[in-house]
Image 1 (tube, rainbow over the protein chains, first blue to last red):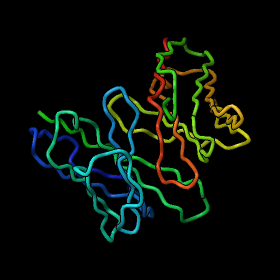
Image 2: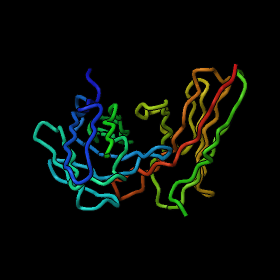
Image 3: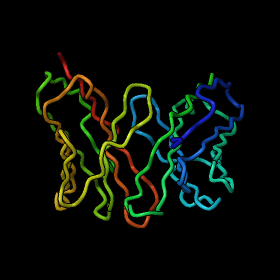
Image 4: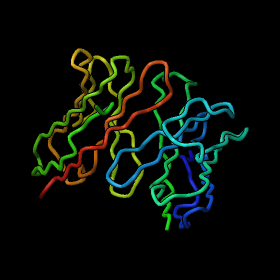
Amino acid sequence: DAGVTQSPTHLIKTRGQQVTLRCSPKSGHDTVSWYQQALGQGPQFIFQYYEEEERQRGNFPDRFSGHQFPNYSSELNVNALLLGDSALYLCASSTLRGQSSYNEQFFGPGTRLTVL
Amino acid sequence: RKEVEQDPGPFNVPEGATVAFNCTYSNSASQSFFWYRQDCRKEPKLLMSVYSSGNEDGRFTAQLNRASQYISLLIRDSKLSDSATYLCVVKTSGTYKYIFGTGTRLKVLA
């Protein structure tokens, strides 16, 4: 059973550039959430996708956008990169289907983005 | 005030010790609670969900106190492999947003 996968694992960009990160959810999961984790901090919620729509958004500017595809995989796009966007970007998948209503999230290994 | 607060530590404890972490949350409408474990430069991994009546999984016990708005994690008989950062996570009713604390670092010493 494949877990959550993300690509690429590492990325180096310069200020002003644009980046696209990719995520495939755990098998059987239909919901994808994206988080930004700066060094020494907990993950911060960016947004969540369900049924190809952004269902909720955290306190992130419009430079952060996303997409979910019919196969439930997702992309995170960040435009006009700033030095402060350097972080670990985590994707988490979940589902409300099945017996558990607790909606536990499972994380991918993350993409480490460095902006120079 | 942060929505979810944790003591960042680090907690340095000897092998075999019992250690407890607390986490407070500010929104009384919070509905779901979790503890995640994160190793250095790795992704968070679900340790346990926290149920209203409290729950135990081997050496780990989680408790929820809704009146005082805190959750706790107790680790008994600490192992070297328990060294990690423990993240408290809260989800509020009516939202899809999971709110993480900054994490508590635990170092178990030989």
